[in-house]
Length: 343
Length: 234
Ligand SMILES: Nc1ncnc2c1ncn2[C@@H]1O[C@H](COP(=O)(O)OP(=O)(O)OP(=O)(O)O)[C@@H](O)[C@H]1O
Ligand SMILES: [Mg+2]
Image 1 (cartoon, each protein chain N blue to C red):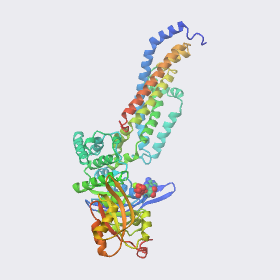
Image 2 (spheres, each protein chain N blue to C red):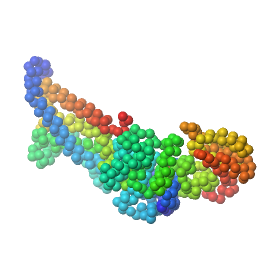
Image 3 (cartoon, rainbow over the protein chains, first blue to last red):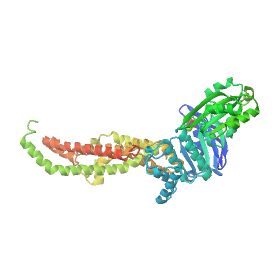
Image 4 (cartoon, helix red, strand yellow):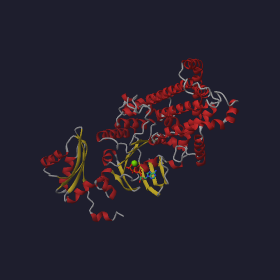
């Protein structure tokens, strides 16, 4: 259980003070995959770095399993950090060490004997599918492989929590997918609590149970992923759910809107919509589509307008939902109903 | 005064001197260089590390006055010309070695001149290490000492090697200079025969050997640095 309460972080810079975090409170349950999404500069990295005290919060508390990390002495904090592993956008591997030694590093810090550490590191490399790269150096690996080594390294200390700061942002969609699968697999098999920081919506959709939207150093919205993304209430969440070009498409829509997310779907986008017309007799109007075909699988998203009643929308959603495709109705906030929530 | 440099007698005489004196002088230069480097690294490496880890957002911030003093001393020693430094440290040399002349005595000023230089070179090398990698180590619960020994130094080995190569070649140059003021080695031969006794051929021989020595050190150093660097895809 991770409990963050009223966390504040003020940076002192040459031109005055800057509040990167303005009172963030979240709690993450054991074994959960919790997402934190926000635009660049929202304070995501600052927040995640405060969780393991790489950044000292100006105010507020971070408790992991009841231990207030801010109150620990540096030696105790170091011991506690071994239970909170972290992976990064740029992998941050030791470039002069081979993969096996990289994975051995946290074990060495924990005082595990060299021989034993090597055996364990080799097993971890096997877990992440890189058993044959034990003696390769990071420079000889692809981005995805480097992140796998970083994950193996993160798992070496038997952590309770895994923090991922933009762990897939430097990877292509297909590699992103496989890394996310690995993270989910680890979460399920080892019961590790995962906190995923990202600016990519599909990452959250793919693996998270709950999501918090951060904007200007505040959590502006929180809830189950499906709820937040299908009916975003805050301005920031809406900006994430509808990038500007998507938003431009919306005013023309009179119909009910269904949002489709393709995450490695076998079915291509347009034929699926055609199928909906043929099989179910529902003709959908494509409002926005941004999909890519990568290695025969489709990634991206699409907004379609559907005419008609609840039943038709429900049938359409049932039809569209499938392997690698998730569909859900988008609840559009009309201008009147949202006004009250904005400042 | 130059007209009889290349006469046959001059060649024969120079060759005789070179044959009998240069091997010993070369040996003196090499061992003075090696010993000076060893002591200078023993002092300079930790200081270089302190310069990096001790700064305000370093991994082990030290009091500001301490860092300022350290920086000041290093800059001060680096700005004194070596030839003057030799004279200034004579009392110290005498206190440590017992005499201020001779090959062994020349090690004292050499160490004092080169450790600040090495400290700065080490500092530059260590600063090249990716901050994010250091942070990753911190996130794993590594202590500052562990970060120094397991991340900072090993990650900058290629850079340290090429910088130490620069230091060695500089020290070889310094040993030649210390030959002027009582030190031994190739510098002494060059000055003694060339400047004091007009035996220019001997001076040329001795200088040529110094040049070759520097070239060898430079090539070996570069080769080692490249070989040690695992960032290059091989
Ligand atoms: N050390 C620092 N000193 C001063 N300001 C900082 C510092 N670190 C972060 N900030 C500021 O705090 C804000 C939040 O930064 P943060 O890195 O947390 O953003 P982020 O949400 O991770 O963005 P990105 O998606 O670009 O990584 C930014 O405006 C940034 O300029
Ligand atoms: Mg960030």
